[in-house]
Length: 177
Image 1: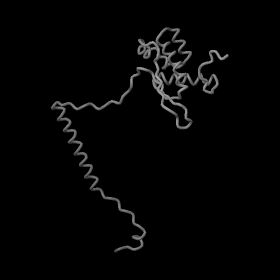
Image 2: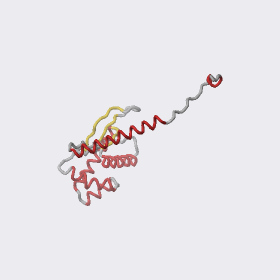
Image 3: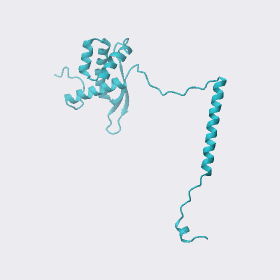
């Protein structure tokens, strides 16, 4: 009978598989979004959700259990401080798996696994210009300075001599003078 034989083997030894899942757990908790194969993402979901539940408990015993599962100081600190408060009101379902399709080389089904309710870091946009008269004057001065610098650099480029073109073989053999 094959009772309680669930999970994925990944074609690896037990030690290799455990090390793989530890490293992927550390990566997912620290980066909050990683790309991997679908079976690995499904197994990783089980591990990470258990760790986040331990982080929500916040007890010393839960911390020691989490350290035994993932011995990485920064990851444990993030579990018990940041993710603890983020998922306080949520009862499970801390991760999301998004299927990406087949990988080009071996047609393995790929997926992105990410933490739900994560804060996305967006690039900072430039500030909009103020409409006040002082701000308008300063921007005009800056643009004038830029244009004068551009004009002077353009005239400097015009005054410099151009390099002579290389003579072809015909010109070398028969000089015109």
